[in-house]
Image (cartoon, rainbow, N blue to C red; front, side, top):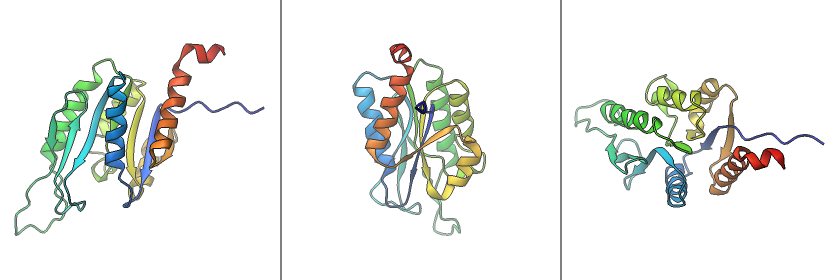
Length: 184
């Protein structure tokens, strides 16, 4: 009989452009928090338009409920298209770093995106959570999957962008973390 693989502390929810990973991660985190699980991290709250050029995006600090705007106005003469505001992202990183200093059961991070794939953004905080042995779930757009794989080094569980997959990973993680599971 082959032993069952224990779930990794790191779960990557891999998603495509037609998946609403942001809403799924927010619903998952809020549901766990409502049930008494200590959840910290950042979930993305999107405006009505889902394109980077026009969408209003905020990150919700799960520890405090505060929303941090991560979009900037580029102005009519701008040649760029992505409105990600590095100042807002730095503010979100500070909030995440503060939350990681508290006792918690799970870290949720909205995305391993372009900035993280370039070694910027929330990369240090992701690394800090993993180094501290904190269970972490993160959204990974398919277009950044190779960069994620290089960063994670195979230490992650890949999940489909479905609530059932995410809930199954969390249940397996909780069961593996329970001392009674080791003696059963």
